[in-house]
Length: 295
Image (cartoon, rainbow, N blue to C red; front, side, top):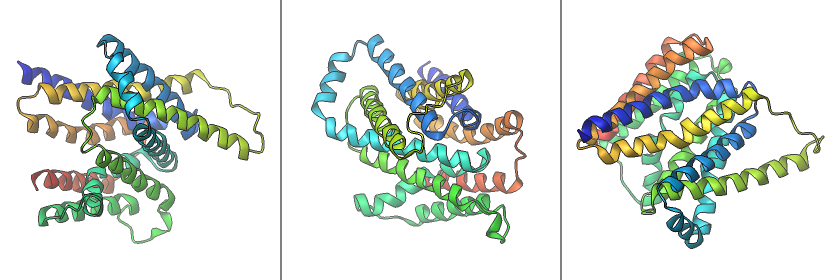
């Protein structure tokens, strides 16, 4: 029974994560990357606060914030502030199919970073996984053409930088035993503080510092959706699935459905023509990720 519930929770999480690449592009029609991140991050703080209230965990959560303020200030700077700002900037530059596919290589990036940061060594299977994944990135970035003049290297660079930031965030958490909801709450509280500073800095360097762009209902709705289903509720669903699962391998494999479902939504909702090279490159990335899990 628990395994069946775990599968239901995991499928719900996968389906919701499959929508976010499309949601990012829709939201960016109405908001800048920084505006989108701010609305989404505030939504996530409220979401985690509601969960903490329902679970009656405020005492432990507040104690956690008092005990490790500097740690969570740094965590919040990386995620959500830097990571999502860079990721949304990448989506602003690239077709959704390219940005979402490259973003899936963060697990490969984490293995690469673990070598200098944690002193780990790469075995042959992990090296093969990296070659496959980054061959997929190259194929997606260039469209299989050797004429690189058509490649948006700024967007590709931002997408790859986002994987570096996300991998760094998870490496910092490898030995963190704090309750996950409380930890995420403080990450996002500090993230909102950093975003307020970013907005203040942007106003100081702007030619029109007193001008505030009006927030449309479409932009607000899209930002709230991203905050709920990319950063908030979906994580809780996935965490619940992993805790209930009696066979975690069966659950974790479901995540490979997400990028391909996402391509369908990108085609149907955004009207992007899915390139053959995108599908081939994404397949190489997923094969590389699967190979890495077996390593």
